Length: 221
Picture (tube, rainbow, N blue to C red):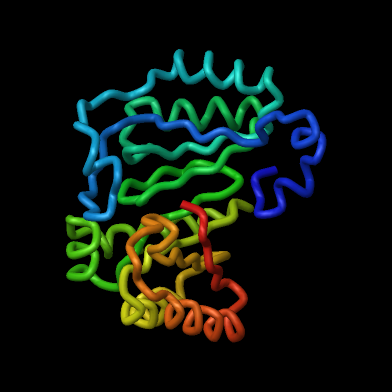
């Protein structure tokens, strides 16, 4: 239910002005320190996390409004919520489609419709430079471990591009990962007034996508 064509396949929701999916922020905590993160820059992280009971109440309200899928994401890292696994298991047991946006520094054997890992880097040094911690190898190990579960989850990695020179190192280092897609986000999708010319980024990504259908250009923040 949560796919790139969700508008096409949910025209009934669109016609009735009803939401299709809902993003739910499970916590304001994060175990990364990404310099581009708006939430880290403008919010004081107070350690607030949504309880399972509150999540269940909110989810049932959203479903009553016609929402067909829930995305666990946030101004923090969703896996840091103490009830994260309990929330995922409830969604699975209730047959509620859900997706997860995560840095996946922590491994969980969950079964969402999609699992998108914000990776950004190609080795430990670049991970620390871009995400503020040294967790590249751990994250790569978690991605491989998850793929080995054999779930039908759509598994992908993502890089936020701040410099076109980062595209090929990221792709070269990570292209052998057992993922369904490799998503790149040009920086202008985050800060529209940055003024950076992204034409070189787009050319590089379009050329990559010609040879690797997993390569996607994502303009949605």
